[in-house]
Amino acid sequence: MFEDKDDRILARWLAGELTPEEQKEFENSTEFLEYQRISQGMERFKKPNFDTSVLKDKVLAQIENKESKGKVIRLKPLYYAIGIAASLALIVGIFFNEISYSTSFGEQLAVNLPDGSSVQLNADSKLTHNRFFWKNDKSVNLKGEAFFKVEKGDGFKVETESGTVSVLGTEFNVRARSANFSLACYEGKVKFETGKPNEEAILEHGDGISLNTAGVIEREKLKEDFPSWTQGTSVFSNVVLVEVIQELEAQYGITIQHNLANDADRFTGSFVHNNLEIALKTVFVPMGIAYEVSIDEKTILLKTP
Image 1: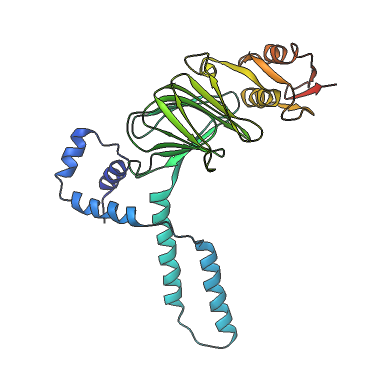
Image 2: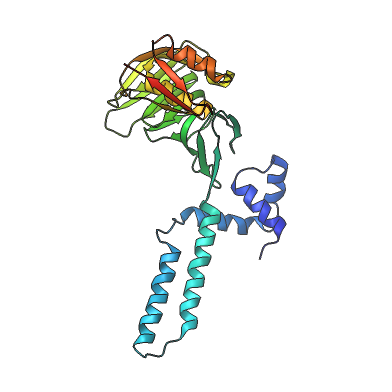
């Protein structure tokens, strides 16, 4: 049985968080070989596809069924089996659980990944990745928007509902809110794949893409050297108004009621993140759309023709 200190070393080693000095000292320790065996065994281990609560219910049902038939059974081995299943689930949870980072409306969050890469999360966004074995699986899952600065190396991926972004070492922005997806490359090179045959794109410095309502990739050239939202302003160029509305809701925690179709009027412009009144005016007044704000400023009703 490992001591608490050894457990902490194991966790940090598996996550790749040991300093060079700690790594050298650790590799010279008597426990290192045993730790290696654990790591190799866990890498070969595949997470079992079963629910321990369901298993428990089935076993207990069998016990009750046999008891109802008047048969004599030994309960200890069955409960022992349940204990083994529960212990296995606990081990799986420790080694395969995820770390999650999330932001609420109007919030931003800086995240440092195990390999030194950094992520800036925009409002109403969530980022998750595996807690251990980062060197073997450098993938993160994104819902929302984030700006990535990735250290050079192989295998870094950003998984979204719209597709996968693969990188080697670069700076890029991913926006994956509901059905709206866009990708902007500010440095290096990235690859985007939708998962459908022959639907992919390679982006280099200054390139941007988005998916239209039909899921087709549309290309564009960037007009900025960094994502504007990191500086407190959202900027749009010829996007459907519904996409702008979604971002207003994410930044201000409001609900905008409207009857606009997803491919209705398009918007070019920007809005600030620190003043709702100004943001609403800069978006809707130029488009000739009247609106009404509730007393608590949580609901906006668009008065479209």
